[in-house]
Image 1 (cartoon, chains in turn brown, cyan):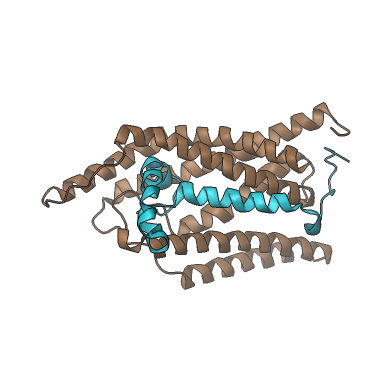
Image 2 (cartoon, rainbow over the protein chains, first blue to last red):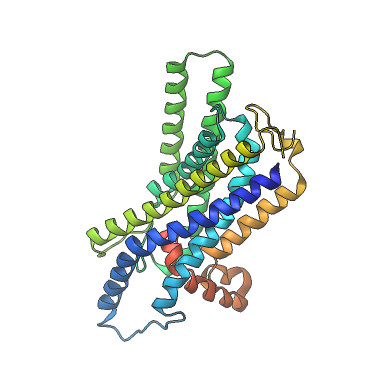
Amino acid sequence: MLASYLRRGIAAGLLAGLLAGLFAFFFGEPTVDGAIQFEEAAAAGQHEEEEEIVSRPIQKVGLFFATGLSGVLVGGLFGMAYSYFGGRLASGSEWIRSLSLAGAIFVGAFLIPFLKYPANPPTVGDPATIGSRTTAYFTMVALSLLVVLGAWYAARRLRELGVAAPARQLAVGLGIAVAVGVLFLVLPAGPDPGEFPAGLLWDFRLSSLGTQLVLWAGIGVVFGLLCERASRREPLGS
Amino acid sequence: MKGNTTLGQHISLGEVPLWSWLLTLLLLAMLFVLLSASGELLAPLLGQAAGIFNYAHEFAHDGRHLLSVPCH
């Protein structure tokens, strides 16, 4: 069972990753190009020329490689997570369970960290601080996932204890808000965009949000459809 | 039982096979190399050898930025 979920996760991830790449290509790349133009204009006065290891057109091919392979990797992880959590989710169909799990991971692994550390285009952020920024980002991802996991577990326990829905949901909602608030306060601030044009920054961040949304929506939808198809074909087992 | 997707059927944590834990670690490590590894980031750990990660960094550059991971 685990192996078939893993297979479906990888297939869903590959397709979702390529779709996310397509979205990023049309909506994100213009803003990345804009950021690089801004960087070049800002550096025009100085002598320092940045050496180019990989050309821009190749980097745009690399975009599909990066989103496609990311999709395969997170899709595999999603499939394994689903084999563990899928049966524990309250919803009745694999379709809804797949969408719920994808939504929960999207919020924990991307959306909450994104609110604290929004995506930054090239030129924003001092290369000298990449180590601490990377550590802070992945710490935020891990802890946000824990918050989502904890919220789900608490909601389940409270329901088992017979706590009424309004009290249960308020308690869990408040718990999430407090935990996220603490993370925002405790972890270091993100980099200052400085002189970077605010409109371009917003467009870039929006396209980054869209890219991740397409990725996770794609994984949830394709994985759910694959599970539905498998259970229609073999209603009593494989 | 195989492939049966009845609601409520699930494996306990102890029943999760070892290979899936190892595969999880492997996938996370690959994700890190794809999305985060760069010469600058790994230089304190690997020294000069970290430079090869600059190719991964530059090739996956746009994807890293647009997937929201700190890049450089």
